[in-house]
Image (tube, rainbow, N blue to C red):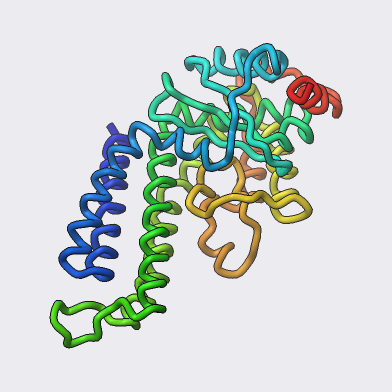
Length: 307
């Protein structure tokens, strides 16, 4: 019931934000158009948000014949978690990362990048997949997918407001209809994405700690995920940043967007150092850990996928 309420509040907040943007850009007519768009997006977000996000990243399904090692590992973790087997997808990017999506555990998807299976060993891959299964088990995936779809729509409307301001689309204050004027449009084009980001933050940051804890329980320990987070953070902030949309950043195991200043202040994920410290400071769990692998285990996965 808690997640149903959270989903309802999320949809309500994003709908109100879209309607306000529509009113600012186009007055009463813009408000009606935004309300219709929000209704369509709410419906589409529930049924198709997973497909939209997968298409954004050109993810393709992985079959058991292509990656028996990856499938076998996921099946082992799924049994431990007491979940249905999710669909596995591969994202054609060299930066290591992953996300889960879908409207419920019966329709869940776990998507991993080429970089993840190429650069991580078996225990680290198990840690990342367990984290994403933690999101599935805790029923976070629908909320995250809806937030991604709606935030993308809000950013699109904000861009429309920006272009309207540039080309003089806004009415000046005092004119018929009470439009926002150029200054108002520019203000809205900046505030709207910031508001969408704050909503994403409110949803995702606390859920990452819970998914880490659940993932450690599924994997039988937190060390694999802790090591994976160290690698993911190093690549996200260094040599292999991921080509990702800010609207979907909250869905990934680690924020794929590197940067400091305001980017760090409004990060959708908790600090990596804190997540790693919590994983390594947690007492051992009862279930046996996933057996580790040599450093070439990820290469074996990758060779199978690319072969």
